[in-house]
Image 1 (cartoon, rainbow, N blue to C red):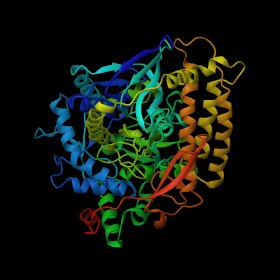
Image 2: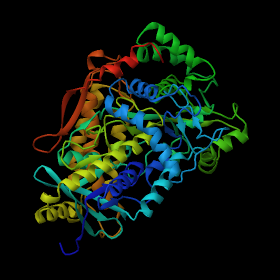
Image 3: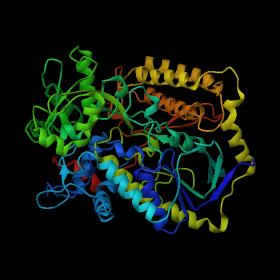
Image 4: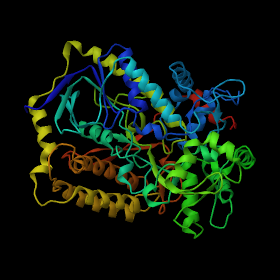
Length: 602
């Protein structure tokens, strides 16, 4: 392979969002020779779309907030399927990561006392989201990017990784190509950190950007690492629904946190109709606690629009199905009647400009038309909570591509803290692992590089095959209609049958032209990853015979306590042609943490 470009590092981070950049900084500062490889341009990571804030119990607005309350909120939001240790570490360390960002130059909004401002978000007992208007993710990426560049960390932009290499059981490197030229590139590295984000481009309506094709999930599975919680996909309740060109683009939860309310086509605030059943069925351990939660959420401080995202999405879905939806199949989000134009433009500048420019809607004067959009996958690579290493030695994962932290449903604001807390841990532990391989460093076989190159260019050698865009459209439609917000065994079985057909179609996809920037070729490679992830979601969802968090079964509508201690995991089957499901018991929570749920507090 004469055109191969080759590099050697201690740690290679795949992905340059919040988790990837924080991991790279952590690995570099721990002494590792570190590189970041990103599919897009540096600074264009999907983290910039996380607008609302970073959940951290700093107590700047509510002094009684602390990590124990944040931990309890996170576990309850995840329907107790979270890995308790990840939720604990996140709650304990998030404040330090926010203050660290500030020390690196991040400019947060302030309280009157000059402290970092914190706002309300769904599922959080107290206002605890540190924010920069509604552009928090953008400020976070700016700060981390500036830090990484100033440290001299090598960055490979517009470079896609297609395969991981192994030496025996251990990771040994990665293979990819430059998107502009199509030239191949290989990395020798004993430690690889996956920070590739989510899977939203498998669905027709999504807030996710084009990079979110499940690359890290698929790379991990193909390397032998199992995934956990893949049945739990979060449909953010508020995405734009009109015009069609912007369908799915996120409308931040900050709109509701700052006073926006949801109305149906009759102009009625409908969330009050859904709040009581939620708390009595899902949150409360006792009837008294249910009543306390209910009272707390019907007063002015805790509006019902700030229920956890899965509940709000289901309520919107129910209103639309009942014929009380907006003209284009959503509902209305109204902040104009509740807040002044000055307040809206100051607190929600991005939302104001987004609707003005993309939909010709002035949100200071009229409501937004919104609906659920595929937003986040709680499932991901099964990792050790403290180190973020997968079951494959040398392979780490952090951020959305890692599973366990959020259980059955993620609370808003917990994603940015997740990126920082576990990005740092992954980077530092990967660096330590790489240092430990100095005497016996894993190697990459030349035959493996040749095979990876042959697989990448295979679509060019096929003539008269299918167009990648046609297959992608059909896959998105299948996942949207058959494995969406409300699921049944019959529909998911149909989806799995279609996925088997898609595998055959993808194997015959042909690409025309040259390897120089060729979007059809790029999609043909991404399709393999999206198929693997889609099958993982459908099989895990078919297996879990209950409704919990981001997983709703119309044929099993109740939450079943017998599933409350079971994790559903997926892995490649023995002949590597598909996905198989297996179960593990949830890790046991220590008694001192269990007590946090026994005291009747909320």
